[in-house]
Structures are given as C-alpha cells and as structure tokens.
Length: 333
Image 1: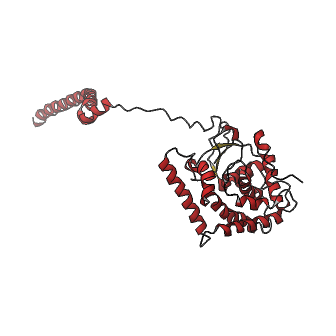
Image 2: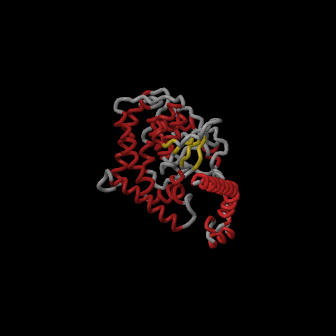
C-alpha cells in the first residue's frame, strides 16, 4: 500500500518538473529577445543624456588626410635633396648658399647621383638640420626613410657610387677646413655687421618671416650661436687672427693641390674636394653682396684654389647664361 500510494506521487512530480523545464525552454528565446531589446534601449547601455545632446549637435566626422605641401614632389621617382637655396626656379640647380648643404650637394653630383634640389629650412628636417635626402620611391615599394647628411656617403655606396679612399694626413687637412676656414667664415658671415646685413640677413632671416619682431629675434639668435661656436676654440674673438688662420689654411691647401685638378691627385673629385668647394664657391660668389671682402681677397691669392672652384662649378652645376660669364675669376692656364 505504501508503494502504490507513493508511485503516483512521484509520477506527478516528474510530470510537473518536465512541464516546467519545457516551459522554461520555450520561453528562453523570448527572454533573450527581450533582454536584447532591453540592452539596446535601456539607458544603462547608452550614453548619458548630456553627452547624447552634445554629439547630436557636434557629430563625429572623419576628415580626409591633409594634402602634401606644394613643394613636396608629386612624383617620387627622383632623389630630392632639401637644402638652403633660393626659391627662384631659375636657381633650382644652382649651388646652395650654405656650406654644409653645398658640401653634400656637390658630393652627390660628383658621384653621378640623379638629383633634384628643393629649398627648405631646419624645421622641416627630421634631424633638425639641413641637408637631408629623400631617395626616390620605386613602384610597389614602401617610401624610403629620409637620409640625414652623416649617412649620405653610405647611401651613395649603396647606389653604386665609389667609396672615398683615405689618404695620409687627410684628417689634418680636413681640420684646416672644418676649423680654420670655418671659424673665419662664421665671423665673416655672421659677426661682421656689414656682411651680416648684406648677405646673411636676406638669406637666413628675411626669407624666414615678414614679421619684424621675428626677424630681429632670429638675427640675434644667429649671431649669438656664431659667437658661442667661436668661443669653444677661442678665448677672444679677433677677426685679424681668424682671417690669418684661414689664410694659413688656404696656403697649405694650395700646396697640397699643386698642379693637380683635384685634391690628393685623384682623377675625379671626392668628398674632400666637396668640403673645400663648399666654402670656396660661396666666398667667391659674385652674386653675394659682400661688403667686407677680406676673406675673399685671401682666397684670391691662391690661383690654383680658384681654378679648382671654377672647374667644379662649370663641370657639375648648370647656371644661367648671365652667370656663366662671371664664373671664371682668373684665366685658366
């Protein structure tokens, strides 16, 4: 009896349990759908009202990418060297008026690298100083990284250019250019007030800004930087001493060059030729209105150095007809 009374009870309990499970299973999609609607519409899952009103008034907009500067080459199948240079298109292939830029401009030309130049400034350089080279981009390749000045020789070799041979005492002669001539140049261009106003001001100051206060501040910065550079190796800044040291350097370089066309007896110009040419060309440039010609007169005493400059300017730089008449300062032998 006990068994017969308990069995119906178990059966009824199982039936009720299965019914409940079936109902729960049937209602699961409905619950999920309701939860989805609740999540999508419930304020807990949306932006607060003040932010919604803000974005309703100022919706998010994705703007197109900025266009490249006009001076950036539209066709990247050419090597472009960014240097200090006049913006006049007629002087696009003319030598730079900055020794550091002209050194590498000439060196690339000496190695037969196809090259275009663009006027620029230090703020545009990845390294903070000009020059820098933007190599040509080949099809289906990523744009190459800019090449700073100190990596140009290695890049030239990678392009099939020759690696400069080292010569005995070359470092000593290089020091004459980098220290003696450069020190006199710094005074000649920046600290001689007449030359600063006539040459440095239009090249480095007036071309940068049309605002008088900006120009004045930049001019003071340039002259202050030149003084600081000179004080690194001089206890006092004596222009007579600086020019005398430069003349000693010119004399030593004149003896080194002798009757050869290029330094160290090379048949083609190299990096050392470019280093000297970078100063000689600017010092002898008749287009620059030098008020004080002290350094120019010192260089003119050494005819073979002048011939060296003339030889390179004619051989590697295309100049307009009105300038070629004034290139040769002394007759060629």
